[in-house]
Amino acid sequence: MKFLSIKSLLVALIFTLVTGSCASQQKDSIQQMQPAEFAQLIQTEDVRILDVRTPAEFKSGHVRGAVPVNVQDDAFLEHVQSIYSDKSKPVYVYCKSGRRSMMAAEQMVKAGYTHVINVLGGIDALPANIQTKEE
Image (tube, rainbow, N blue to C red; front, side, top):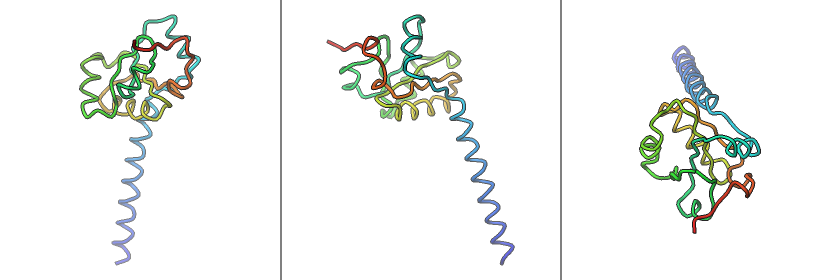
C-alpha cells in the first residue's frame, strides 16, 4: 500500500514538472518590451502591431498602425492568422495594461508564432503622441 502511494506521488510530481516546464518555455519565448522602447521603435520602423482590446476600447484610442483583434473573441487566433500569416515575423502585442496582451501572446506562441513581443504596461503606459482616435 505504501509503495502505491509513493508511486502515485512520483507520477504526480513528474507530471507537474513536465507541464510546468512547458508553460515556462512558452513564457520564455515571449519577449517583453518597455513602453518607451516600443514608442521609439514604431517611430523609426514599420512593425506589425496587434491591439487585443475590445472594439470599443480600440475606437477610444489606439497606437497608430495597430490592427484590432479582440483576444476575448472565440475566433481570435483565426483572425490573427488571417492578418499575419507569416509566423516568423515579429508581432508587437498590447492591450490596456498588459494582462490580456500576455494571454494573446501565449496563444500565438502555442499556434506557432516565433517572435511575439508583449508591450509592458499596455496602452496606459504609452505616450500620447503615438496614439490616435477613430473619428
